Length: 286
Image (cartoon, rainbow, N blue to C red):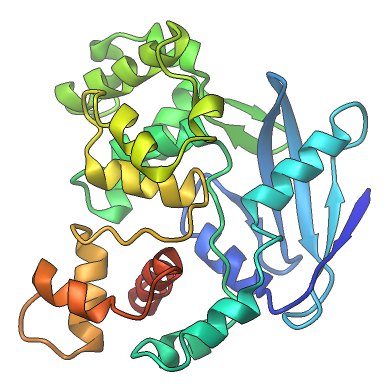
């Protein structure tokens, strides 16, 4: 067992609330805990993170990471849950903006990363052009068919597993033929050595976009989501995202979804925390 303390605010209950939207996540709201699938040096580790503190005085109990992988597992959990980010500074930044009320309502909500960068990219591909409910259903079906479970938590299939699949196998799960090709193609890029996600994580946003956009099935929306929720980059605002457009329409009481030019105007003053603006706007309509 390990104990982690940090400076508040950090609202883990709101974190769990958002994580619980995904049926693959092992969330226990009463216990205030979530089990996190980690791949540490190609070995699966099922960590359990439980909140023991408050929003103002956050404290976490971590179980399941004993042994040789303890230190790296702790580092990865801190990265996933963004425990190093001073949320009070970000909250203060938005107090003189049109987002003040949303930031007050969701006070202490961090950007939480997807548990695995490869899984993040796969999920982005699966979710493309689907309503959220079916997107989660299809992703769950995919992971339960080709992934694996350890200590009550599901792990996404590894790249070598997906690279060896056929389009027909994914079509049986209700993938479109094109989406099946994209998932398999991405996995082959990794297994055949053309894409190294660990190295990519060290690159600036522009280089990540340049390298990923070359892969079939990965467009700007997917890369922006990967930058935000795969790598934790703080200053992304995917203007093509329908959810953000709807949130802005609601916030500004517009008759139609905002144009990109309108969005550029709204965003003035939100930099350098556009990712947090995106997250809180999503939260405002979830």
